[in-house]
Amino acid sequence: MKYRKLGQTDIDVSVICLGTMTYGEQNTEAEGWEQMDYALDQGVNFFDTAELYSTPARSETYGSTEEIIGTWLTARKNRDKVVIGSKVAGPGPYTKHIRDVKVYSREGIIEAVEGSLKRLQTDYIDLYQIHWPERGANFFGKRGYVHKNGWEDNFKMRLEVLHEFVEAGKIKYIGISNETPWGALNYLKLSDHFDLPRIASIQNPYNLLNRSYEVGLAEISIREKCGLLGYSPVACGRLTNKYLEGTDTSECRLNKFKVNYQRYNSDNCILATKQYYDIAKSIGLSLAQLSIAWVNQQDFVTSNIIGATKMEQLKENIATIDIELDRATIKRINAIHGLVPDPAS
Image 1: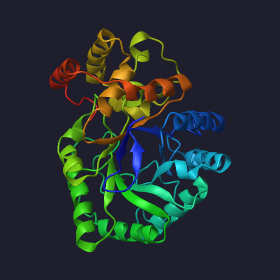
Image 2: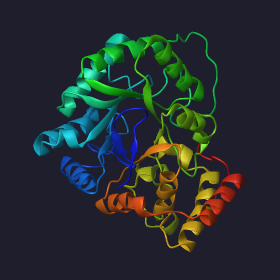
Image 3: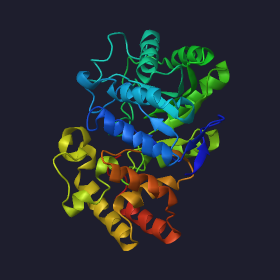
């Protein structure tokens, strides 16, 4: 395994991060335990979760992923070997079951942190993140920015309440997710000006079908030392062989939850995917291997969040850490991106 610093912290995290949002929905507790055992044995020390998970978000499975991680941590007695990242859920039609208080209010954040600590059965969370912007920009397939009046900027309040948890030792570091360049710079500015916790990372989607992070945010990650925790490196399964080779089933994510992932089902996504598949095949890799290895190599990426429902998928994904794509392959990838840019952004 390879490791990189998490922002300006003293924590080294594995370049491959274990995504866990299927635990409690597509994966049972036993399967989640098996995945975490294997990942840790392979040197993966970074696990990503959120109070929202498992997904798709619904009241019946709210918090189930953290609970499964919590039972595993307690049974294995290995809390010091794992870096845990979690998140507070933001506003949206799929989060109304989570809490009644105003989203991202002081009370809401306190409730979220304490709830995650309890479910995870831990005294502290290594990285705690704002899951998406309250102002309704740049998340879950939303393209561009549409200004809306009436939104009140409460960035400073969020940093202040998270600072209290840092001071209490319940959170080590903080991060943001699904943010824009403006949002990231605003957090950094306020942290510096008011001596509040500094964001260590930005967790946004990043894959061959969505390279929008490269515009603005990549430079911020490098210059401000708050790297990308890239999620959906295989675009919810679109960037795998199965949909092109006809081996997908009704249980596959894009089939089972089609309405949730429409951005990966567009004609342009399928067009680009076929061309990336041809590249992978020509160099003896699966499409998933090509896609994940490509993310691993980006200099602004701190960690690449992979997820799997099957152990064979997990093993293939983690093994990409040993794949190095050459310049000729990167050039072919960029040529396709030039013809079909960001079809799922």
